[in-house]
Length: 402
Image (cartoon, rainbow, N blue to C red):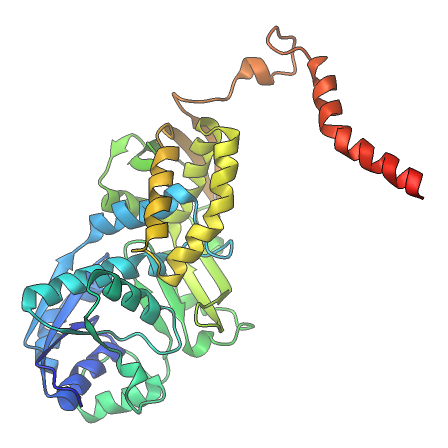
């Protein structure tokens, strides 16, 4: 076993990282410093330091990254309209490169040459974390216990934790995994591994069931400046506060639940259940303002790139040359995406019912079906014939050749 003096562990206090903390000390006989990035886990950070120290850590760092997460990661994906496989808004995917960046910063501060994480050898997170580690600190030593130890399942971890009197919240009766941050909550594993089984009603935290949502719709307005959301119903809010506000409003009306089977980067399919109320609203609102302010060909170019950007985010290629180029392009496209969207929330639905922008390219004078002086309808005849020319030539050729 390679001699390691100090390891920085990405620590959540959950089952996996609690066991990993004890396992690292037993296996590597090293000092373990724990680190947690506050990306909006809420009450999950309460008592974390006491738990880490009681389980064997020498210290715990908690880095407040909520506004950075919202501003630099969530809003970047929002500007791109990036949605993985047409459904998943990537709340977990977007948090991982930020957490990994903070992880490396703590390793540098502590003079540690090794970092450890709790991602499994079957999942996407190991890739997201480690691509960031190596992009920012090429020679870092990475310890991934799920790829090293002899435990085969979370049931084995539960048994180990009970044997070593490590306090945990997971049980054999409720073994599914939950990941929470400012943007969303995800649920996977355990009772959710059967893609035919409906998620239990009691697992949801952020959102009401649409059946239990208010019978009266809620109207809200979201304002954008250069593609970035800045206000809700006229109130200017910080990035993190804005998402939290929309989470509360959207959750009350049952907005933002997603249940999908997705394709992991490592090759297998997995079933995930997600609650993302606030960012679901933001995607609809952002698209509405873009529909007014973006040139047609710029919008179509963005739309063609959105699946590629979503894939890069989902796979973990955040700190890459191609992502830097994409972010520069996005910033250029968003220079005039300023305006307001009005939305109607009702029983799980989020509908755009109004939009306005000082840079609107929409002209009622041009679009009207009433009499106008700006558009000669006879001009359309030549436009159509020119676009039909290749189709007519192909048909003539087919007729001649039989």
